[in-house]
Length: 151
Image (cartoon, rainbow, N blue to C red):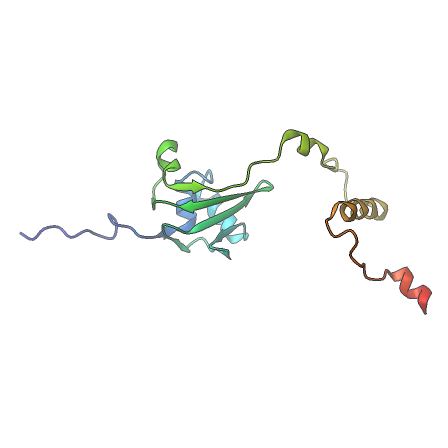
């Protein structure tokens, strides 16, 4: 009798990105992982990933979820969901640290259900953003009013 040859199931070198992200507990369900891929929130090596895109050890997976970005490096391939300690060994987390509570509290936020911003509110928001941007001295394109006045 010949020795058993390793099958594709025992020596996986790649697995679907939606299955892997679910297996290492980056998403609660596999359908949520697939939906995030379809929505363009998952990138593999800098390229938007479809749910069936394969991942291999060494690939960088970036996930945008709930306003933050997770950056993980694939360490080991797994296809089935495992316990949290084992899942932690299958990836290297390179995510930036979350913002401090003081920074989160200082960020302006609209009340939920207050509707679309008015033109005045939008201009104030734009003014705040432009004053906080690093290229404050950059030349701005002429506004509509400037174009009408100059002619």
